[in-house]
Length: 419
Ligand code: PLP
Image 1 (cartoon, rainbow, N blue to C red):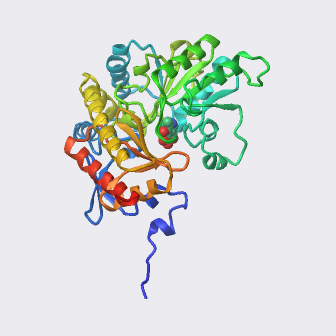
Image 2: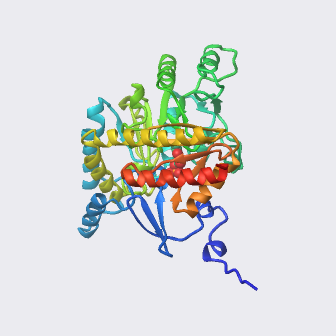
Image 3: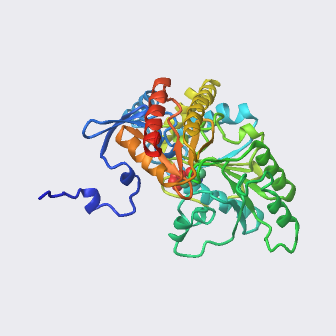
């Protein structure tokens, strides 16, 4: 009789755990685009910490700076006290991100998660406008705390709230209705005093919905949305937590559309090294917070400030990373289009180095990801039915690594789909 021994993950860790079920092994070491498990098996990472590892695992440039900082007894924890690490980061943000793009933003350090940045953005929008309603979009994902969940689409995740999620009205995202004017309803409802829609404080949008199935908003749609908001005094919040920090090419995912949001949320890769950190950026006039009005113990993760600063200096002082991201994204897209051409019911969507392989029938997507895992590739599904394989390698992925991952994926998909 075989005795299956339960591990401490099964006996002690909560049922809420998720990714370990998709990738049932125990990871130990990681470098660049590769993870190794405790058996010594190597896995190529096309998941990148859900967008937190744009510069790869244990990036040597960032690691050196972090080790030097720790060895020199640099401040690790500082709430929102002023520190050298924070000053250096703010100056670098100004010099490498804001000034080259002509952006005039104030910087808020919320708690270090994406959800906390979203909470802060929603609170600020409500405070500044004195209005309660927020408009969000179908298939949106903004995090798991109550405010962030209220603007998230997924029914199962919303149900976890256990209380009504209120003061929100979902609008159709670009392409949701299959047409090319999904803003028509929003425009009409906002302008008709009998539509039943309360005038909102803000609209919150992702330019590409990562968790929602790699749904891509067109530049023209984003511009119309920005114009619609500006004309009616509604604040535009772009949640760039997953798609910012170069994932779609430019540092911000909205740059390509030529829009300037009133408020931007950043997290995930802003810390550079995978260390927790988040930012809320907003127009100076919106800075109506009173001291401590949105606080939190871990707003001053100074180790992350160091790696964030070095990442900005190293990767964003010239256009090389943006160009290579776009080139790699085009290569991934071409490979996926080739795969889609071989198998009925598959299609491709994405922007920059986030590309989705969309399955008309959802179930093969998860099976293909599982097979890819068995063959040493980490890639996850997204979308309301998990019908999309989302490819999101670190931006620093080498060409041969990219080709290898695409080959593994293509083999897995072909085996599952037949052919
Ligand atoms: N917003 C977006 C667009 C996200 O993709 C995520 C996480 O995936 C969040 C917010 C929430 O971030 P966190 O999980 O750090 O709270």
